[in-house]
Every structure is written in structure tokens, then in C-alpha cells.
Image 1 (cartoon, rainbow, N blue to C red):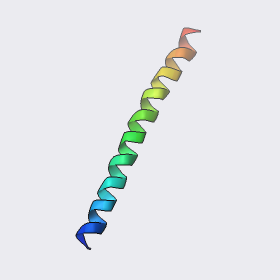
Image 2: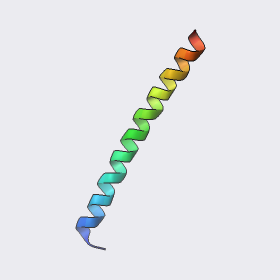
Image 3: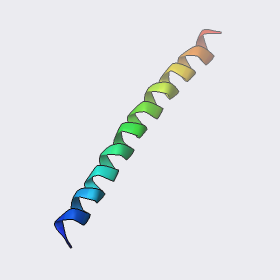
Image 4: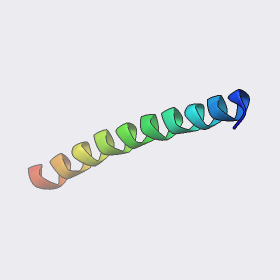
Length: 37
């Protein structure tokens, strides 16, 4: 496996991880709003 390919994979993974964290945060907010009403 070439180094360039490896770094591209790594970058994709970090992007996915950030998006997952973002989704999780929004989910927590959404759940909080559902409970508060």
C-alpha cells in the first residue's frame, strides 16, 4: 500500500469521525428537546 493512499484513507477516517461526533452532539440536543417538551 502506498503512503499517499494510506494518508487519504486516514483523512477520510478523521472526517468520518468528526461527522459522527457532530451527529452525536446533535442527537443529544434533539433528544434533550424531545424530553423537555
